[in-house]
Image (cartoon, rainbow, N blue to C red; front, top):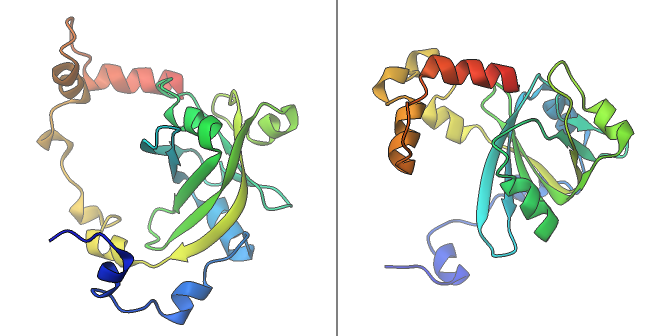
Length: 201
C-alpha cells in the first residue's frame, strides 16, 4: 500500500522528541565548527532545474572545508570527472545539503543552505591545500545545521575494520564502466586508474 499523505505517514511513527526538533540550529555553533574542522569527507546533495537530484562526495585533509568568522561554509572544488552536476545544480537552484563525516565517529553533521560559486582570490587562497588549487569555491550561507545520531553507523558498522569488504568481490572499476558504456578499447587496470587518480588529486 502506497503512502500519499503526511497524515498517513504519521500514523506509522511517533512524534519526534523535543530534543530532535530543538537541535536544529539556524547557524553553525562551536560544536558544528569543530566537527567540520575534523572532517575529511562530505557528501553534497543538490537539485537541478529539472528537479533531478544528485549526491556527490568531496574529500580532502581534515578541515579542507573552511568556515568563515561569519559562519559561511567554503568548499573547494577539487578536480573531478568534469560532469559538474553539483555546480550546475547550484547555478540553477542555489541550494545545497551537506553531510559531514569523521572516520571513527558514528555521529554525522547535516548542514543545509543557500549556495553560490565564487572565484574570489582570497577565498581560493584560503581553500588551497597541498592538493591542486581549486578553480572555484562553493560558498554556503547556512540556514540549518544539526548533529545526526549514530544509529545508521552503528547499524552499518562502517568504521569496524573487521567488516571491510574484500575489493576483489567486485569487478575492477574499468571492467564495470567498460560494460556499462560498451566503449571499445583496452580496459584500464586498477593500478593504472589509481596512478591516474594520484596525478589528478
